Length: 484
Image (cartoon, rainbow, N blue to C red; front, side):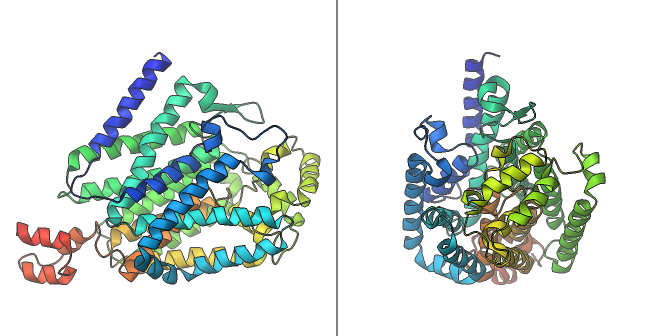
């Protein structure tokens, strides 16, 4: 097919997906477009790359960055902060409930003081706040469940079809040469790992959305939305195979199984069974990592996890301060980097420049930048996120299942990729997952997609009892009462 005709076809298809996915029964805030735009950029290419406006020659991008990108993210952050100030009460409740996040970002701010480049570290800390702001914008929306659904759909409807278009018809944009000479499929991104993590979060949320539509037959425009979400999930699965991202594929298989299980009658609202299933997944992941030789061979990868174990062995001795780290996002701009490159070259890595900002392990990345203190805070965030998702199972099994799946995916993803960092979709969605469970537990989200199922499990022969059990202000229960 001619590339121009293919482009027109794909654009029409994207418009068709948005049309099929419409739901006039809910109305999300226009502010939801802020996280949609943000995730679309960090999940593809920078604003400078899209506009082909790169910094002048000779600019040290690591230290100085891109003025255009800085302005772009600055505007998004200011807009998001304005929205959150307007929604003050809900935001204050969520921030108070998420004290581990405040503790972590507070420590990151303090760590700026011992960075070799405190001015650069401080700018990066300011930019990192945008992830929290975007998660809060989604959860504090007037229709939070619809906002969570639409966030992944709007991002996925654009990025996934466009990635396939780039790979098939514009290889100069959608494919790139790896250091070993082989061609990699990158789609709308600049790296196959970035494409993999975008596919991971979109596929997790799409599967959750699809299961919810299959479960609740009273959903507005249900058949058309099922088609749209089914097509989006199909795009995601095809692209996961095309991108050859073993980490994202494995994480989706684990988290997808968790979503399917938590939406099954045997697990619905049962904390003990969900907790057991989650622990089983963690044990499986740990065993797979410990016996990586056999697992990676079965997946067609080298026993060194594509060289990652060799990188880790080189990096760990260069941690400038095992307790406090190099400072927030400062290791890869510190004086230790030259020594790291030298060691990597002697170890046989002839292209160390591809590792300038990447340790290929989220936990090691945090250790290098923030030391054992930062690593302990990340562990606290993960454990807290897990416990809150489990606690929310009885109040809203569907949203709690999504939150739990995202937390588990983030924890496993961090084993082979540096996911606990700014401008990474998996980190943004981890913060969103924690905000979702906290919102359910604190009452910020008072109703959800689980309500109809909860009412259905009660004695529907007594409509007044069912209505009282779910709250007089619950719209879903009221609709069920009217139907009865």
